[in-house]
Image (cartoon, rainbow, N blue to C red; front, side):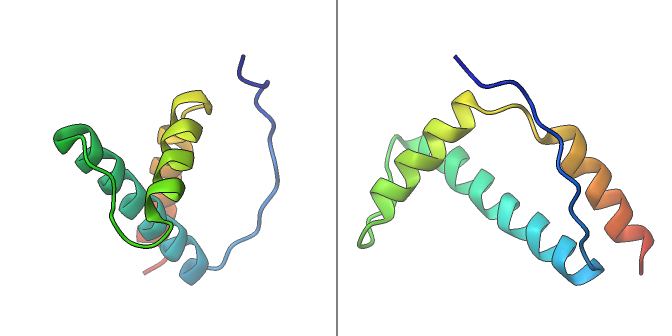
Length: 78
């Protein structure tokens, strides 16, 4: 059973927020590729990390709305 959502205050600079969005996007692309091909990354330790990412994605609360809002904020800081 997933734990109840918790809110944290996190102060980010524009650069940190941009980096976070890129990192999450790369993870989402890796998960999508896994679902498309059924394969996991083949580097040393990558498969275990990917399995952990997939499990976390399945059980975690959606980050879609907060990340969309973060992306909007990052774009407005240009």
